[in-house]
Amino acid sequence: MPDQTFVIPAPPVPSLPIEGVDARFPVRRIYCIGRNYGKHVREMGGDPKEQPPVFFMKPGDAAVADATIPYPPGTANFHHEIELVAALKGGGSNVSPEEALGLVYGYAAGVDLTRRDLQTVAKDKGQPWDSGKGFDASAPIGPIRPADRCGPLDGRIALSVNGVVKQDGLLSDMIWSVAETISQISKLWTLQPGDLIFTGTPDGVGPLVRGDRVSGEIAGVGTVAFTVA
Ligand code: MN
Image 1 (cartoon, rainbow, N blue to C red):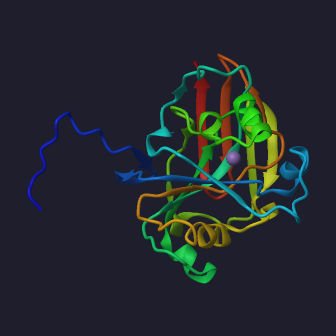
Image 2 (tube, rainbow, N blue to C red):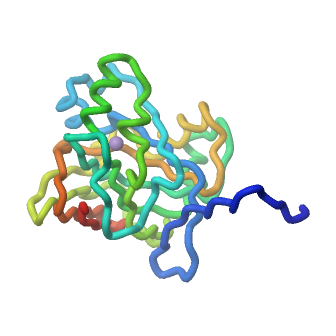
């Protein structure tokens, strides 16, 4: 393919560091599932057995590894949601759950940052979630750990703010497994290498304010940490 010329400088490819690997993971799209832990579904007013999975997206360049996250504009209720993130090396459509984990390059701890007030208005009015979920730097993610070095994905997932534990759950409490989530997303979109999948958050979501120090940890996967500027 010949070199392309562009009328403006081409935007950089968003990318994330990989634990123990001297190369970065290029990010294409960010898919997210809502309502995937029973307790969080209940705290948000739903019944986990009656709700089908809800999917939404963030722009790829919302993925950031920076240690400082700006307090976003347009919100007075900025929330944390610690989540297991799967980073894909393969893709496809109509992927079976049995095939799905074979697409995963690695896993990371990420935070689905949310302008909860804007999301709540959107939910109430039946409007899109983009302004509540897909804003700049809304997806801080820790180093990606290659899948073959991760532990079993059934342990603790927790987040602390200023050293106080706010979210403390178990990956084994997921309603839809990572494999089932990948399979279901692939029925709606063609997955590609570079896609990230946020797999939902346990209960305990809550607000962040400027100056907060946020740290998350997922057993067998790794950590994510940032300060709200
Ligand atoms: Mn979420």
